[in-house]
Length: 177
Image (cartoon, rainbow, N blue to C red; front, side, top):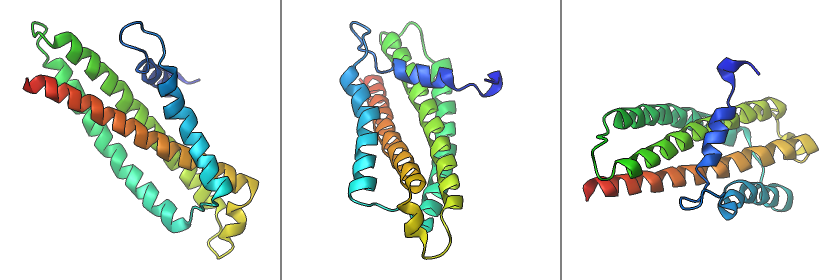
């Protein structure tokens, strides 16, 4: 893979945040919750409940994710700024440093998921015909596969944002003590 766009470190660092603090083992329940559950829910929504993605929904999602990616890049810069201004002599320095590293990894992964979701939505947008025949595409194997991927990414993105929110909350709560 081309070194300039190799994203494996982003994914690896994100997965490292799923390690237990005490024994550094993977928290398998959390991994299942963040990765298998979104795929399962997406399969149920698309295959059983026939949730269909329309052009209007895709347009809205593409625009929303584009804005969110820009905001996440700004948040990355803010985290970098906080890291650079951290006082190593502080009693909470180690906790703060660990949380900031995890937040940085999670935000980077969220940006990657956002970009991936937008790419799949654009692909789906071009596969989806502009007429009322969109149901035929959505019910085709490729339409359902793309729908499952998009919905899985949306759910995973939402869960990751909630994890980021919790970690930022812990960080700020420690700062206010």
